[in-house]
Image (cartoon, rainbow, N blue to C red; front, side):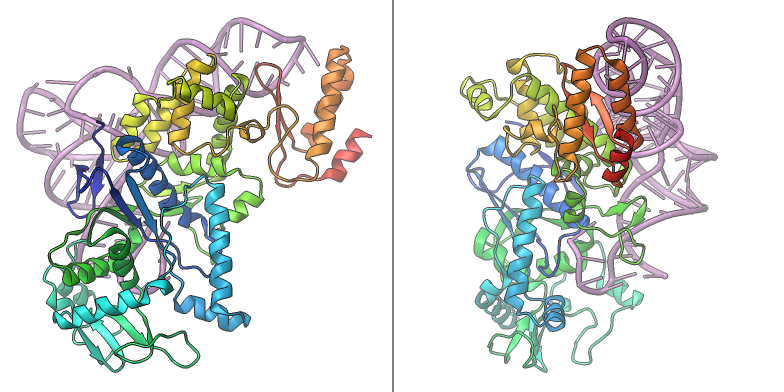
Length: 480
RNA sequence: GGCGGGUUGGCGGAGAGGUUACGCAGCGGAUUGCAAAUCCGUGAAGACCGGUUCGAUUCCGGUACCCGCCUCCA
């Protein structure tokens, strides 16, 4: 069996992965707070975990992995959005969850086995909070329940900080009812205009961290294998989860492996609304950037390094995707072809790809192995390459790879001018066939002048892409 | 102020104490009515200063610079 090694934030080492139960490998990923479209940074942990889950299923078996990712649907940002729009919280969260599914589906991310909503696990949270109070790890004060960080000596271990150092750094606002400045909220009171649930401490709502402790325990048990999220969640969110879960269940281990991905930047800068470089996954998809291209760019940087999204990378990624998919289409790949190859036992990803992924999810190394593969063979010879693409999650539908590769006169995206350009390409092809090179060159020139990228692919196909600022009227003038 | 991470060839980006990463661009060639694409080949690196070692870009220490977290954030 392939040995998977993962960098564990808890041990600060790259350790061999040992599942608690190889028949049921269990993972939990902190999901989104659902009040708005997912931005590009939100996609990174999703894709990292997607590849991890695919790898684990490859190694331990399709049915041997349970993947949980939550939706945080109770949060002050959601309340604010509801107040600002006059809509109900449920409308907003339902809509946002639907968007999230659309966007992550477009990136080829598998749906988790469970996607619990925080609001569906309030009783479990209340029970866990009560348990923490009983055990002397939490206390009620002025309608709040707070976790007592001094009661948990290991507090700070996951993120490598000490309570005293953090207080010395003193940038936390200290509520007067806190015993210690670092104590954090498990439960807080709700006003009449805020969502709330009855509890032993009055009507209120949960603090941010308790939901993940409660839901992971409910769905995966008090001890499970892998817990992940962005590095920014390491403190305080994950630290607090550890404190809650380990104090509520001292006999259990909670998460054995902690996986944290580094942040995303855009053109070398932190993505932020003030810098004007903030965009969502949907923005990119609407601009015609295929989900496969977004995935490629994401996987081209190791998850523990800051990832810089640039247009240059997206362009480069698009070239590779088109080239790879083109080769597969040319070799006859389709759903039925893949079925035949699987039945024939040819469906095995490249060892170099699996080995790279097993080495702390070296997705960049996996892509490098794909670059080296000879694409000139026929379907059976390309099967290891295709199975590798499949393992990396690049293919949702083998019948669609042709259109993603923009083969022939087809194109992706829904630009209204695609049809026009396609017609012109056919006209050019006909002109070339008639040796009317003047006409052929005139069409090419016109397309080039409006910025259409045109390529003849090996085997006689055509590929084109429209520029972002494509202007159809200009094309009309030039063609006339 | 506290904590953590990074610095690789023109650009992007990996692994490994000693052997070609890989991609893009460049250069040379093949192919093509022309262009692009495609195919083959090829030069180029490890912030700085010390230390360990037969040998370090890879381990250790220091310096500089960059980034993130400590407050909602993936």
